[in-house]
Image 1 (spheres, rainbow, N blue to C red):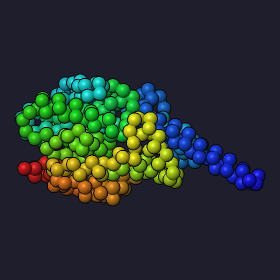
Image 2 (cartoon, rainbow, N blue to C red; image 1 turned 120 degrees about the vertical axis):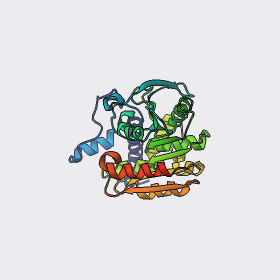
Image 3 (cartoon, rainbow, N blue to C red; image 1 turned 135 degrees about the horizontal axis):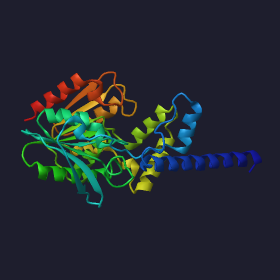
Image 4 (cartoon, rainbow, N blue to C red; image 1 turned 90 degrees about the horizontal axis):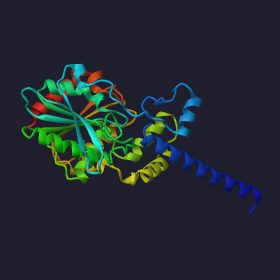
Length: 318
């Protein structure tokens, strides 16, 4: 073996090990929250050095907390705690309607908390629905500091829905999920025999490796092989196969009516992904695209359009 070839092999091996170390650290930091408020969530997008440092060291995500409650919107509520099948305690907000015509149980997205859905909750309450809002494990008032991007959160969906159906046995129960929340609902349907009566989903990704790749693209970094390595190490650290976390496959188990909502300029979930999820559904479905919006709250960005679409869909349920 020549000296040049030996050096080349050493460089290749060093690069491979370095990539895996970086991916391992990124995966760990993406799935484990730090104490609330301890670090910024994102790098300065205008600084190349900051983006490179962020890519190498990984995100440092504070534990999501609730700074407000339904009382701040003049909504009557009670704080409830339920326990999941794997022993974690979840915090719920129970917001009863005066003359209920049904109920909705709500699940937030990755890095979020139930407070983020309060405007949607108020809207549902105005429609005459009982509302139950859930903090996933690791967020808000619930136990833990680890997130699995929808895998173990499916246990949270089962526990919360079971409590909500006991609390509100009359009328239709709608499940509402934002991004990871939507994915957790689909997983609960496929793997835990959940049978919802109706579902509203915001921007569900089709495959874990795809949504991880979008995170790298947002930072201007090539997604391959980083996204695949991060998916591998993240799954290994949390005890699952990340390449089998594919909501598009889980969607085939959902036979109830489903409203999908998405934004045309969402950098984290493409329109094509949402269309693939919809195409896999076996029940009646409707897809509405908010033109020009990104990965954000639709009710805040387009309140009139959002309220019209959702209210008409709920009215159309039979």
